[in-house]
Image 1: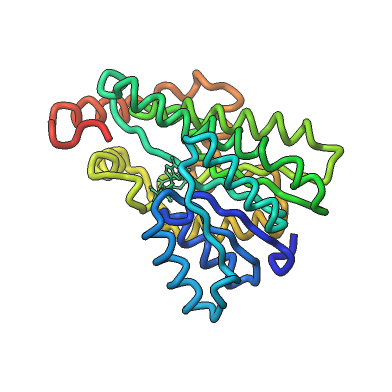
Image 2: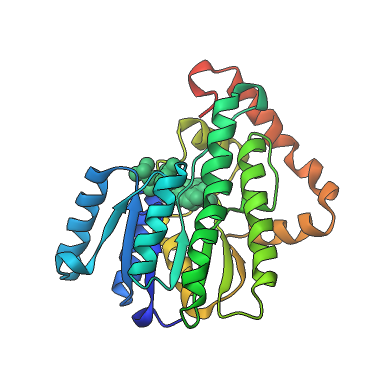
Length: 273
Ligand SMILES: NC(=O)c1ccc[n+]([C@@H]2O[C@H](COP(=O)([O-])OP(=O)(O)OC[C@H]3O[C@@H](n4cnc5c(N)ncnc54)[C@H](OP(=O)(O)O)[C@@H]3O)[C@@H](O)[C@H]2O)c1
């Protein structure tokens, strides 16, 4: 849709990608409702954005919500529906990097809850009101790792593969409605999401990282052109296609990643995240 008519609920607004996306959406003329867990971070971000974009207090509402808490998620959905939200952008997410044995059960549950269960529940809670909005959009920030599984990302990939499956099925389920469902798969991006361990792994494997601003620009493009699915970066886009066609054919290409992970695991200060 045209940004000028978009009323966007942005989860993960306080994150590296979320902040850039908030700026890009506002510059394009969209209205925004911000959400995250920290009232301090949200208040500071809202103040900064209002100052930069010349907005009044009521023009940039924010709601504190931990998306892993069902009651807070429901309350957020009610606020957004009452505000006539017509675009839901899921940018909240939690990382998990490391060999499987280094990722404990609590981290696994938190990652699945944040990256998969919460977006599904928030979408479900918002759907009745979104269906009343002409041309509503639900835009998931997934990952290239939601289409290609790499050593070190078993748990994270499980959450993002799940999210991609959810988005694809829901897109088809809602094909005869006003609601469009979209999935953006960024590659590795320079934010606090990635610790020193990921940066060392990326360096060792020759993995490029994008800026958060370029991911935000892609989100804005997807709002405008309503494309169903887009992956960022080359060779990642090609990799997604090949992996989709013949997944085992790419196993050999990622042996180096497995060796890099094993090397990192011998350096105690760099294991897990
Ligand atoms: N960075 C990358 O390399 C990369 C690559 C591809 C895809 N992605 C995806 O892009 C999205 C944004 O990533 P990022 O790099 O911007 O990460 P980030 O800087 O770590 O930000 C994460 C955001 O998620 C929010 N969040 C986390 N857990 C939450 C919860 N339980 N309830 C509510 N909000 C919660 C955080 O809010 P608080 O202020 O409450 O902490 C923060 O705003 C994620 O979905 C991630 O999986 C990232």
